[in-house]
Length: 435
Image 1 (cartoon, rainbow, N blue to C red):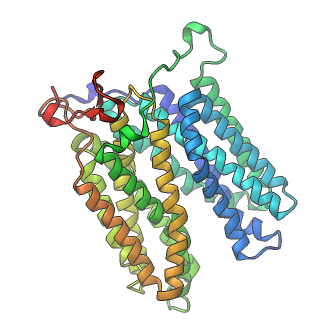
Image 2 (cartoon, rainbow, N blue to C red):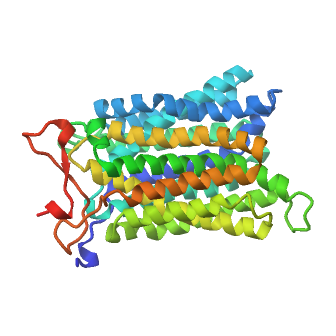
Image 3 (cartoon, helix red, strand yellow):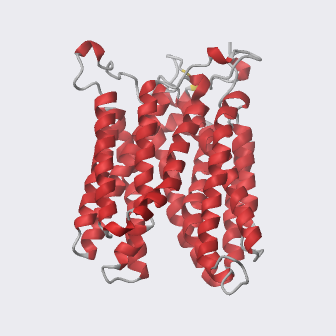
């Protein structure tokens, strides 16, 4: 077993990317709670307010295929900085919006930029992550986003006295700084030609190649289930449940406060789990953590609407957050294992992001309808079933992070390309054929 000194360090360029992600996430955390109230100030109703929030996710979904193609065509650093710059521009425009239609369009523009920098960042991680620490790097990337979302609302509260438009301008300025740092650091612009990164001449992995791998198909199901639960139902239906179920109770928090604390505890559980699951997936593999995480999140979310007890509500949210944290970094590292470092990953990463976005959009809509018809217990129950189903799919899928030699260090199942094979029959190296 290799000693700690033999474990590679996180490359400097990835540290820059992770730091930029933290700055972006803080800004997102600043504006996310403010945006609904800001939209409401234009004199519109609840549906129109929801449309502003949903326009961001819808734009991400629609432009995800484009983001994968342009990432493969122009390279991750250029697409990343373009995406961040577009989001910055959208924030300035949102702050200057004079009518509701303007606000709706400008917020949707931000979704286009978001999918560009998200897909290009995931693709860049796949290219630059040393195989033996892919899980650790995926965990650092995920943690930077989670921590930013935790501290963002705190910063936003401190900025509340500056007026409703100021947070969007401040966020836009921070995005310009982040884009500039990433651009000049990762593209090599401004440096001599001898110090610039070499052109990226790798071939792009075709989507059908990835879909031929059952682990990639399993990853799509877990991305969809996680998007449905963590990014959709958790943020939209859970607060409504807490506000109605715990109203009038003799509890030291009212309904909305209980919802806020529950979401915070979910984030805390998530961060704690990510800190060890990411490194652990480099040692024991991705699959065990993904399966356990999906099962834990599924069970705790599935029973959330059954027990109307505020203490149990808080406990279940914490455990569900830990379950989500167990699977987040390993499932992203699993895609990196499948793609490897010798293929461009733009389209493959974009498809995974689309799966998450579809879940994040469809989840709140369908669960909201079920809640109206049959109650919260059925809505949360369906979400639990989807998560557990994804766990079962993964149970019957092969591990992606396998030892390159029996008993040796895990380095991921890198694509093994046979020139005599067609693109659709690329094989993946596992224990049985590693040598």
